Amino acid sequence: GRAELTQCTVQSALSGGCFVSAAASAALRGCHFGAAAMHGVLVSGRARVEMSHCHVHSTGAAGVEARGRSEVRLHCCRVRHSSRSGLFATAFAEAHAEHCNVFQCRFAGIECAGQSEVRVHSCRVHDGERGGLLALGRSSLRVDACAVSRNAMAGV
Image (tube, rainbow, N blue to C red; front, side, top):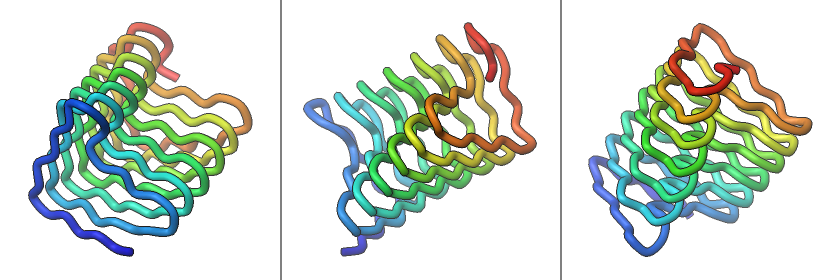
């Protein structure tokens, strides 16, 4: 199926904010995901999600997470105060972020693991409690025209 959410506010004290799985797709525009016990937005399986001008904050896990063979694209989004990484891709997932502001995350601002691919363009990653950008395993991280600053550990 396909879902489109525009100018929505989602808060969940018991679970995550938004979960898109299987082969579903979603377009999230101007949405606010906050105060979630788990993830802000979780994309799994072969799902595809496009986020534009969204604000994800105060999550108990990753702010935005892509796993499996899913794909997530963020444009002009703010991701902050996550208990894990702000943007996290694992397994074979793909994540693309452009013109985003990722900050004050407990782990890395942007993290890729497994064999995931992450592309980051013109983003700010700052004020994290650990690293700014983190690539693990056989993952691929491409960074272009970004500012990574004031993270407690290594920037990259």
